[in-house]
Image (cartoon, rainbow, N blue to C red; front, side, top):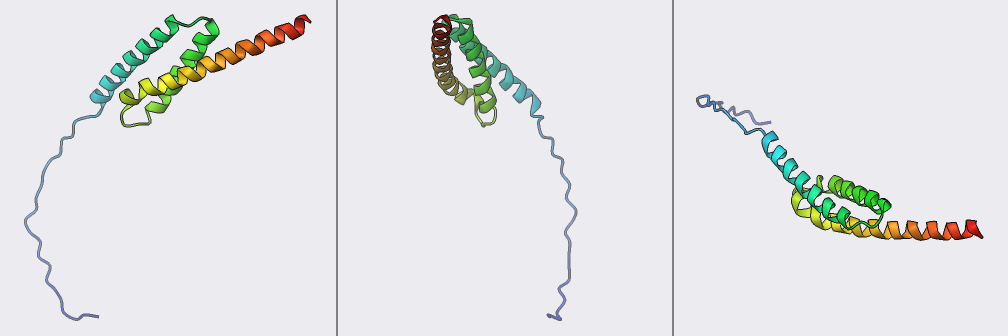
Amino acid sequence: MNANRVPTVFGPETRFEVNPLPPAPFRAVLENEFERLNQRLLRERLANAETATLGIELRRAANEAAGLVWATAYPLLFFPALFEEKVAMAKRRARRQAAILAETRELIAA
């Protein structure tokens, strides 16, 4: 063990104030812009929806995409691409469901 003592000397106390801006206004603006984008893209897709079932699938796709992109740092950037992917999946799912329904009706009628 070292027997030499080093004297402790403190300088004058320094104080300062930090006034951070609240994150709420930015988040609110981002949420509003995101909601407008979501509604616009969904409205465009729903206008071309052939069936009510497809409309339900499109709404589900929009909700899934919205939920996933909020976990990213740039939801407005990622949402359109992810929404398009989810719409393509929803259309495939709706076509598959329609085919199964038609096949089932044929089997029941026979």
